Image 1 (spheres, helix red, strand yellow):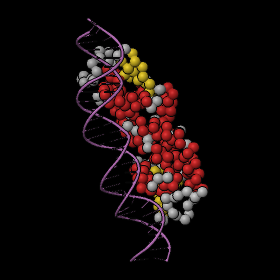
Image 2 (cartoon, chains in turn cyan, blue, purple, red):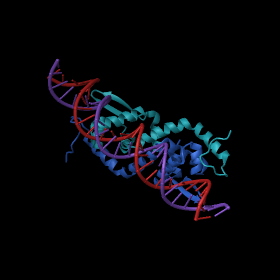
Image 3 (tube, rainbow over the protein chains, first blue to last red):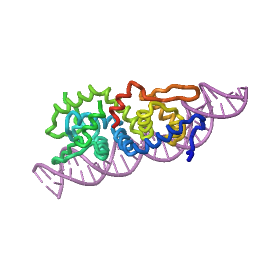
Image 4 (tube, helix red, strand yellow):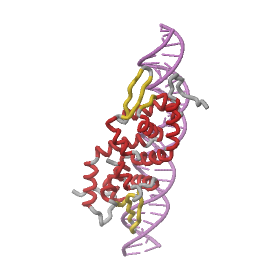
Length: 114
Length: 114
DNA sequence: GTAGTATATTAGCATATTCTAATATAATAT
DNA sequence: ATATTATATTAGAATATGCTAATATACTAC
């Protein structure tokens, strides 16, 4: 049953190692999901967008482009990632597409940020 | 005083745009700091390490290498980033270096995770 | 239909990230 | 001193990320 250990130290706490491995296996899905969310929030532009939606509810691509002083293309690309990641939803009104927080994660985000 | 806008729509809510820009400027430092933390937590290996320290208090590089089943080198590299980012501290005991959560961010992390 | 506006997508490039492999450093034991 | 163990650092390669520039799509107005 001995697993290969990277260090051959004598005083390994094998109980701890096995317990910790089991712990990580049990938390694996949660960790993967959270890592995905954190990696989305780990980009300054995207985090600014989330901050904006926590304050202003909804904005269109054009507004964001103006506020962030970036071209429309990278804004659209970030919004797509946030939408694919489940953090945002959008809604078209004529030519304009408004983005806003996905209500399913709104409280999570409020808890995570600040 | 008119700033250049990326979209020439007629019904721009200039008040909103200016308010949002000011808001982001005021939050800028907080956003930069948080984005840095989120980008650290956005890597699965590093997030697993943080989960482990939220449960087990402290572990050595060797333990982590065994638990995560990764070579010592990448573990050390991740630990360095987490330490540089202020999330971890370490303490040498003989040949062994133990890492643990920086007590200054422990509560923040508990709030952020889960 | 055409023209104009808002948004989305794509290709390509520059940079960042994360691993491997090798080597360096630090501490212990002999 | 040398040998061994634990950790840290470095160079390099593979992949991921995020921008620019160009183009495509969707809607509106004429």
